Image (cartoon, rainbow, N blue to C red; front, side):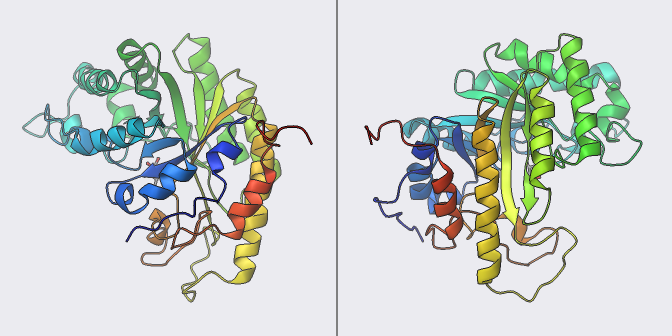
Length: 345
Ligand code: GLA
């Protein structure tokens, strides 16, 4: 069912146009069911899954672009920007990439050649349309004392698979902005590893232009102070920042309660306060932040309905299951800068 946002509701992306773009992650289903909401409030789109490796090249040399192209067509028809997500990741990458037909692992040169072929094909196809790419996703470890996450990329190609990915992407589209993207980006220990990684890439002259802060957060964590510290730390590298996957789970990560069939008034009030604080901080940091993308748009669909507790409903967005603005929406709107077109007074 499609819900039509009332046309008198202020457009979120217009309210924040002086600060940053407002984006949403979409999939082939929400591109239909939430189309009006996207058109009204958002001026940037990202594919939730459709530009991931396994979707674009499920078998060696067999590219499937139909679903990604549909997203691009929708975005261009509506004058929206597109963020590309994602070129190199340890997840949702098919096994064939790392092995020969007989199952034996490929060597470094073969893997890098396959990586280059994929990146060149995908980035060239959307050259001039996808203005920013998450080139490498989640390469840093969450574990204490471990720098990079163990993966087939790391094991076979070594640490500089990261630099290579950026070089290949830059060669394919020298104008695209290239990002390193990760979660737990505001946790101080991981923040320092991400900082160190991006700093070393910059020092080596690798073409990297920004850090993507995924921002899968909840009502308690991370603290505003930790988020601010992360923004300042990454910005000190002289790179651009994009908030790439924002959602605010109503449950803490360790909270496995399953008794709620609707969010309580208390949770909704808390979520609105949290969203307001977060957007106040984003606005204050808008010299560095160019884009704020939610990982979805309205509470009728969120990946959090299945993670980390399978089948448990969550309500992480500014719009409810019927696409009506929640208190969170109005509180975020309230934080927007005074309108540039609102004349004197
Ligand atoms: C990570 C990835 C996203 C998505 C989410 C879960 O954050 O970057 O592409 O898979 O996990 O939906």
